[in-house]
Length: 181
Image 1 (spheres, helix red, strand yellow):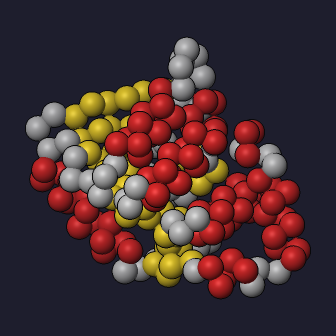
Image 2: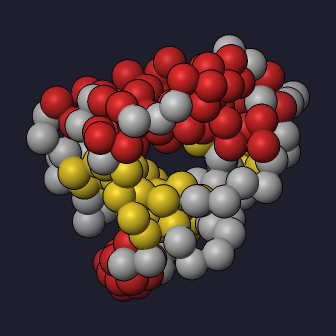
């Protein structure tokens, strides 16, 4: 078994974690499952997710149902709603606060670490993620996520469309702050 440990921080010349996650999403052919408590993706990540869906990839994003940082949570709702509008599956975890950060791509690679899908993690904070390619770890991560998905409710287009005007306004206003969240 081998693991690649990738650290990142504000002194890095490149936003290596952002690049790595964008690349992994771009390589997906069967599935890309993402779990993050904070989902405020930049343009590159959004584009990679939309392109993956257009390629027929099973794109699933698991997010918390309950916030711990209200402003980030509101921005996350706007980004998640845009995913639903592009036929990307958004799941809201109902089993308590969700704080894991996991990505599973096909049967090829899994990442576990401290990196959220937001600019703060990609460019501001010191973060670490571990990349695994061994089949046993990938199977274990898949089993864990399949179990976690049973504790979720999927957000559908009807829910997005029925969001109240004040709720939409607040989430879109928070989304404007995405680069600094």
